[in-house]
Every structure is written in C-alpha cells, then in structure tokens.
Image (tube, rainbow, N blue to C red; front, side):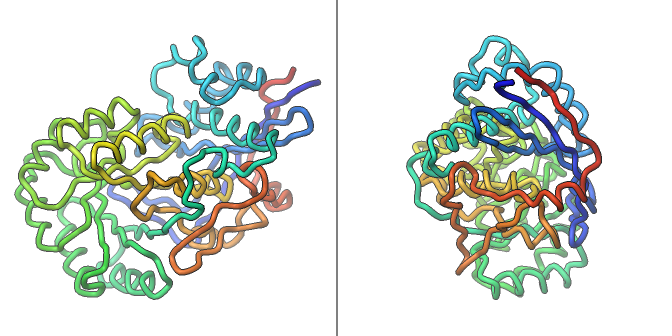
Length: 367
Ligand SMILES: [Mg+2]
C-alpha cells in the first residue's frame, strides 16, 4: 500500500451556542480527513455543516462528492493546483467545500514532504495573523458585555451578528460599549435591496464594514446598495471564486472581502482572491466556519499572508471548544496568533479526544 485516504466524522459540543441570522449551532459536526503516504500523515477538515443554510453544500453532499468523485484522484498525490486543474475535478460544478477539503489536504501533505510549515509554503507571509472576534446573536446587552470583554482580551476587531429587525437594537447597545473601536456587523444575507433605507441608517454606527447584507449569491444588488450608504460593504457568501471577486471589485459591490478557503475551493483560489482584491484597492480578511483545531490551523496560516490586511475571525481554539482535537491550540498574544513552525499545519492530533468525539470513520481510497 502506497497511500490511503481515510475519514473520521466527529461531533464536538460548543462552549456556548452560536446564533446567526439563519441558525443556532450547539455542536460542530465535522468530517476530518487523513492522507497517509510515503511516511507522511496529512490532515484536513471539510467546513460543511449539517444543514445547507450557509451555502448549498452540507455534510452529506460534501461526503458524497469526496468519496465518489475526488478521493481516488487525491491518491495520485498531485500538487494542490494540479489537483484542481485535473479534468475530472474541474468538470465538477460547485461543491467548493468538498474540493477544498481535498485541496487543503494536499497542501498539508506537500508542505510536510518538504519539511516546511504551511504558512511558509503559501509564501508572501507576515508571520502572524491579527485576530478579531465574531459575536453570535444574543440579548443586545449581553452582546455589549461580550464586546467589552473581547476588547479587554486583546481582540483587534469586533463583529456582531445581526438580523432583520434586530440590527438597530444590537448596534445601539454594542456601539456605545466600545466607542471608536473597529466594529462590524454580519447579516448573513438576511436583507434585500428593499431594505436599503434600514441598512443606510446603520451609517450612524460608524462600522468598518457591513458584511453580506443581501442574497448569498448576489453581486449586482450589493453594488447598488454600496451607492446608497457610506459604510463599506464586505462580501462573504457571494465570493466563491476569483472571478466573483473580480466582478465584485469592478462593480463596486464590495470594498472588503472575507475569504474562507472552504467556500472558494481551497488555498490556491484564496491566494488569488486576496491578491486581486488588494490590487484593486480593497481589503481582505480571513473568516471561519467554527472549525476544529485542524481547519483553524489552515485559516491561521492563510491569515498570515501579506495580502491579508484586516483582522480575521481566526479566534483561539478555546473560544469555541473546552477540549479540541489538537494538543497544541493557538494562543493569542496582544491580538495576534502565530502559525505553527512545525511542518504542514503543525498541529498535533489528540487521538484520544478524536476517538471520544467520533461518530463514524472509515477508509475512502487506497493504492
Ligand atoms: Mg460572514
């Protein structure tokens, strides 16, 4: 046997439920992938969730695509870019999170083969990531308390989740609690262009940006909304490729882009998007999908590239989990996290914790 690709499905309880405009999550149910070849063991995590609420993918669709369409091609151990350019892979429309799980697995694998940390393999690095916090929806007064605590802990940007009808109450509580501190709001596509007057009224809160107010796949209406309000628009869900990023910058739909490597099909596409947005005069930060320590390590490495100029949602592991599946969680110092120096993503797997959270496991492909 030269190479094997296996998976472990885990269910990990969050320290506290996390509420967005579309859902409340109490657990992270994640698929962890392991590639063993040539004496090297690489890992990745698929960022899909149980239900297709953030995007059209979910845990079952991504598992089907990985198991039935992608797995055998990973065993050829191509470079990540070559993997994505394979005829069989590039013909598959969408399913970016499934593709990203395999592409990132190959990034970890090749960095480990070379004996270099992933962040150095990505190139063009600052060597650290500035960290912001994402505060889920709760009672406005409670969200304000969390914002104050986050400033004290050293976070460099606060983001609050909002939804239609609650935006003014939430921001009226949070903004006075952290005056003049970088604050943003994320609507997770809860509004339409008809809500432009409501959204324009948020200018008074002096936000660094308003994230994804309109439909999850929209560019044009965001461009129109941008003309009607002073607050910069940040796109998250809408940016699924470098081509979508180009359209967003050309039309003025966004001045800021949140990159999540899972959403855009992996790290190669993430690097291209970050570069394009910065060249176009925009700003870039790295988001998160409430990942375990494995997915988080990829995000921290990406957030440390020079093209990322805004603090991201790469919180330390202990914000979400009492006990993660890695033995070396990230520590935040003065609002910064440094990627690990050991080869690849640099995490040490806590096999006991992984077994404790395990729902299912198996081998997907062998050669
Ligand atoms: Mg978002």
